[in-house]
Image (cartoon, rainbow, N blue to C red; front, top):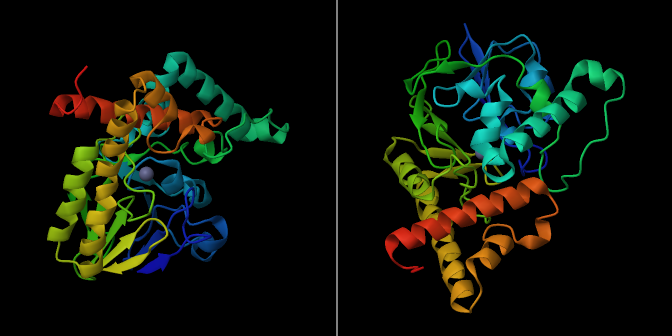
Length: 306
Ligand SMILES: [Zn+2]
């Protein structure tokens, strides 16, 4: 098994990938490390496995053209049907059916091979997100098959695909019992904190899933971004600070509203990114969706009365 660290430091929209050599079968998990990093594995991959459908974990799928693509059972309808991605990511919630259609049309023009040979069209502006990267199109053309949650072996290598909903509804963290290693994907300990800003994200489920990873008999936790390999004790210790960011966002929401701002103003400012990044239509979308979730949850808890 090889860890393929992304360029640079697996910062979004790249990620750390894993190469699993099971002798009779070889898989690359989440090929988002970058084409230079993945080059060494060209021609040595029988299966492409995606832990979830997000861009940073799938954008190198097209590099292994001809290999079957496997996605979790919940999200397998995402490839090649980008309508499904549009619903899960939040595009439909924020920009409507037309917004989803427009996004797919633009991707088909910029990512479609025929179109790119003609020079493609003008790529719309999305300075902080991969909204219009052509790989969205190129890497989702192979219809995904699904792997089961639970036992899933790659040749001679035993793996357990642990269902960890929250970041997305279907996220699976691959656990390798013989190596004592779990790939935690976007349960990643970054300073940014947990991300649950798609329509299919759930902050409470995120925390439950993240803590459940500690029950695995693993010595090593490999995050999908930046941190890399972390010993179990360190992962356990840092996880609470990381999950604590959810509570910090709650507190900020209450403070802003307590200072007399309206809910609309809070939604416009956003709790995850802030309005200075909202020139990017996806960053605005995610900030809006996530902030709605916080407001809704605070209301359900009775902390916020309106
Ligand atoms: Zn993700």
